[in-house]
Each structure stands twice: as structure tokens, then as C-alpha cells.
Length: 221
Ligand SMILES: [Mg+2]
Image (cartoon, rainbow, N blue to C red):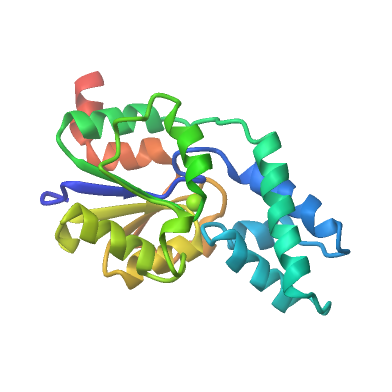
């Protein structure tokens, strides 16, 4: 990992523990039109935009739904999410980000989540961490399409071989790999059987930190 000087982070499940709120708000919103989804269904679609997630729910169900109804469900999901979402940073992430920043790594954030939610997360002391931020509304096609990660690399003006992506969900891994990037996965919401397309799988952020910045560990030990 000698030449790596750029780390591109997914947000949910990597920086912030947001998925439980997405799961709860999707379930509640879908239930208003008699649809349901399992926790695993929702976790497997993590990283996709709300609209794309809704399209998959509709395809999987046998219920026919007008565009108008689908829009209402997406809007309701957002409203419920905004109401219940409380920012909890993932264990170890703050130190990891600060340490990377300290060592002059270029850092970016690539998420399917909307800017208003991203801003709530950045307010937790992460305002000056990321050089580039790509949110759900900034792309034509979200993860698993390569577009979000490709846009980040372009904006960073980085070489692909100097970058590492940290993801926790299959759509994000597919997007990063499609963009030609090395992708690490953390098992914060899904176990490794769902993360096999990643180049390397870690338990959590602390393990990634030990791997990428080993001298921090030797300093402490
Ligand atoms: Mg994620």
C-alpha cells in the first residue's frame, strides 16, 4: 500500500451508523402501501439512491404501483428518516480520519445519501476532512453504477492506482470496482459472504487502520 495517498470513504456503515435508521424508515414507509422488506433486503441495497432502492422494491413485489405512489413512499421514507436519524459515528473512524489527514492523505466521501443528511454527519467535527464529497443528488446514476466513484477520482484529480475505497455494501463495492479502484470492505452490516468482490475484507475500521497505518500501532505498543 506504499503508493496509496488517497482514501475514498462510503458514508453509511463506514463513517456513520445510519443503516438502522434507513431500515426502520423504509419499512414504515413501505408498510403504508402494503409492501414489506426484510432487514437483509434493505442492507443488500445499501448505497443505492432512494429512487433506485424503491425501483428494486417495486420490481421484487407483485404489486403494481404508480409513479406518483412511488414518489410518495420515497418522500415519506425521507421524512421518517429525517425525524429519527441521530448521528452516531462508527467506532474508530474519527481517529482514523484525523490520522490520515495528519499524514497528508487526500480524503473523499462518496455516498448515495442526500447532502442535507451528509451535512448533519459532517457537523460532528468532520467539516474539514474531505477534499471532495459526492452525494446522491450529484450523480445521474448511483451505486452500483461506477459514476459516483469515477466522479470523485476526477474531482480529486487522482490516479486510480493511488486510491483506496472503503465500503461496507455490495452496491458500493461494485461501483468502486467498476470505476477501476481498489476496494476494501468492512463487515459492519453484512458478513463477508456478501462482500466477496472487494479486494480485501476487514472486520471493522480499526482493522483497516492497523493495516494501512501500521506505525500507529507500533507507536502505541
Ligand atoms: Mg455503506
